[in-house]
Length: 234
Ligand SMILES: [Zn+2]
Image (tube, rainbow, N blue to C red; front, side, top):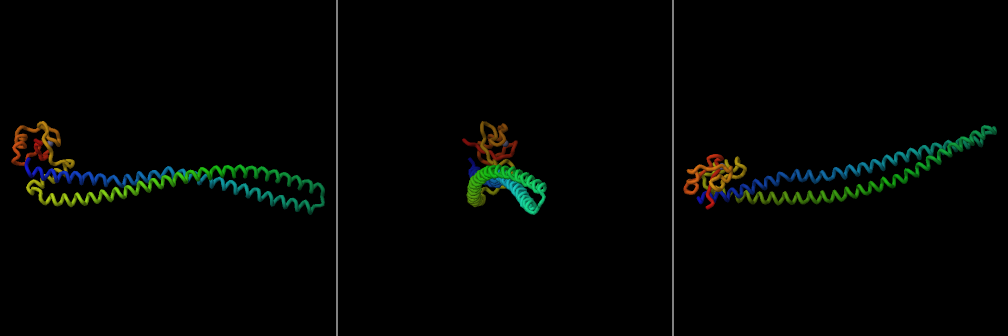
């Protein structure tokens, strides 16, 4: 094998690692977004439970208000009863009092029902909040591990980049422009082996003269189809 090829293969290894590291780094923001997405369901559940508790409390307040109004009315009626000297008016006011007391009974029963319902709603809310807290912890762990993963990838990237720069300095100058162009345009694969007369990059059958050139190992040979630099593994 041409010594140039050996040097290029080492360089290609670093370039491929850099491509892989860049791909891994590009995935991080998506992974972060996916981790945060886990919140959506739990946030909605907590909000729904909070709304139910709130609506129930509003309804209870209304009933308490209605009860209060009736109690005030009863006091007023009783006062009127006390003041009147007419028997029939006294009786009529008494009927009114009884009617309002009946209404208060109904309202108080309703209030008790709502209190029970409220306990149920608060239970649901507590569960939803616990679920949210669990998810929050998991998401924070996920995000933390992504931060660490990113740090590690960046460190690896810096190390490989430095290594690559050193290798590139020593690499055969004449063939570097061709190599750089191929690694960029040929999917990170510039130097490929010949397998059974085929290019290891595009898998097209090579012409006999190219194979002879590769086996001769005196000069750089390229695939006549894709242009990749070829070498023989034998
Ligand atoms: Zn090819």
